[in-house]
Each structure stands twice: as structure tokens, then as C-alpha cells.
Length: 349
Image 1 (cartoon, one colour):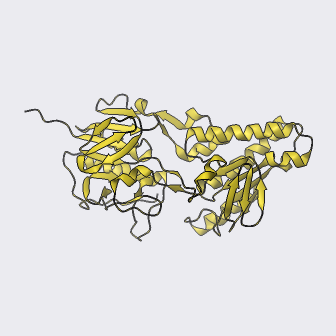
Image 2 (spheres, helix red, strand yellow):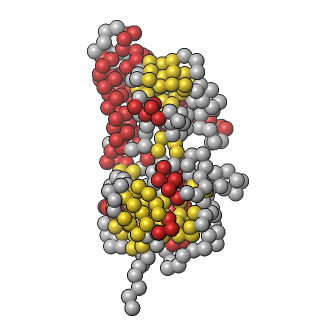
Image 3 (cartoon, helix red, strand yellow):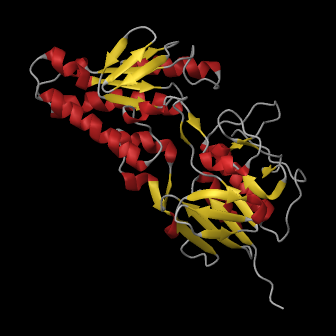
């Protein structure tokens, strides 16, 4: 009697999903990776594409090419609509069904506008290559428009950049824009002066890089200020309109508005009907499995997992990669692990 191989389905081709697949590729399992795009994206460097420092091909690799030699791995470009956990089944947006024995959920996180979804049309997020290219085009067009205006007052909005959110993405983007905009102006433009550029990093909290060690906060702020970035702390955004950011005190006029103020987990996780935190992440067991479903695992930006001090792990590439490696090793043998029999431990290297 022929024994059918396990069907392992991975939703998400980011750091977590790719790491799981890499550990499982030599197993007897039949693996399917499902992602809305057909490439794996090195998200930490998206800001470099947005500011023209790198091209899209430098930070994206086709998922099919990564696993082209692995006969037991299949890649589906598609979007999962819902999870039927009790039936061990997924439903895609196109209506197709995908069966699984073990399911790994690591879908891409999305921008969190904290209930102000209408702001999306005016503030560009930075989660995909499309986002990065849109921001880059907006930056370049703004410089071109400013170059054609003789009145310094009229061209000022086009030389102003507002980055909302003082986390790693916001800090890196603000610094890169300040550096590249001035360099580009010095070399390529005749009618505008580099001193006209205004870059604002807007943060509602009392420090940038919240959650990181104190010395890093201060050093990052000093480096940004040295580049000419104006860091506005304890400055909540109260509204965003076309070409206008309303702050708790004052407002800034510019078409260059970038949103980096936070993320939330994919709404796909809601269909599991299990406990989630305020960011929508699933509260998982110590082995990354979902309570009540020992064959379903959630990791990366989608998982709420506390470290030994009881603090939830941050949404970082290093966390996602280590979780993927742990789970891939755990599932590489032919058995269904029991919840909490094995425990994931993050190493902050």
C-alpha cells in the first residue's frame, strides 16, 4: 500500500516562509508555497529602492528560482481568502481549494493606519516593491516640479518630505531621503538649492526607535539631525489630506507623505477564530502552533510570541528567520508534534 506524502502548505514567501521551506526541502513532505507575489522580498532594504539607492532586482528573487531544483516544492501565486481549520483546507480568492496536513501561516503584514483607512490614498506605505517605486517616482517628480518654479515659496512643498513613524523603516527612509535629495540636487539641478530641502520625521512617542536600547535612540536622532532631518517627537498626526499633514500643533504642506507608523497582521488570520492581540497577531504556543490546532503554525509578523521576560518579540526579519528555521527542523520528520513539546527560543545575535 502506497503512503501519501504529507501535504505541508506555507502561506507567505517572506523570511519565515522561505526559512521553513529550506529546512523541509529534503524531507518526504509535499510542500506548497502560496504568496500574493511571485518573489521573495528583502523588505529591510525597501527604503533603498524608494530613494533610488538600489534597483528592484537587487532586493527581490523569484520564489520559483529559489526552489527550482527541489522537486517536492510547488509555488502558487495567489491570495488565500479564508482558512477552514477544522477541514484542513484553504480557499483562495479565485475559489480554488488547497488541502493540507500541516499549515504554516506567515502572510505579509500590512500598514496600520489605526482606524484612519482614508489616509491610505494620501500617504504611501512601504511594504512592497510597488510602494517603493511609487515613492521613488513621487520624489523624482517633486524635484522636477520644483526645478520649474521660480518662486521659492511655491516650490517649497515639493522640496518637503514628511515621514510618519520613528521606527527602523521611518528612520532609515528619512536619512536616505535627506542624503540623496541633497546629493541629487547638487549634481543635477540648477534652479533649486539643497538648503531648501526639508525632511521631517514625525513620531507620536517621546523617542524614535522605541523598544531599542536607549543609547541607540539618541545616536540615531543625532545622526538624522546632522543630515538635516527635523525630528518631531511627541507630535501625533491628527489628519492627512491631499498634500497636507495636520499635526497636533501646526501642519505641513507637501505631496511627499510616507507612512511608516506601524503594522498590523494580515486579516486572513481572523478566519482562524482564535485569540489575537491588538495588532491582529495570533497568540501562539511555545512551539508556534495555534492553540487547539496542533497542525497549524503561525510565525513571523503574524505571531504573538513572548520571550523569556514576557515581552512579545518584535516584527523583525531575524525573528521570522529563526522561527522558520526552528519550525522547519521540527516538521522535517514524519510526525505531528505535540503542542509545547518543543519550545522556540529567539537568540538576539
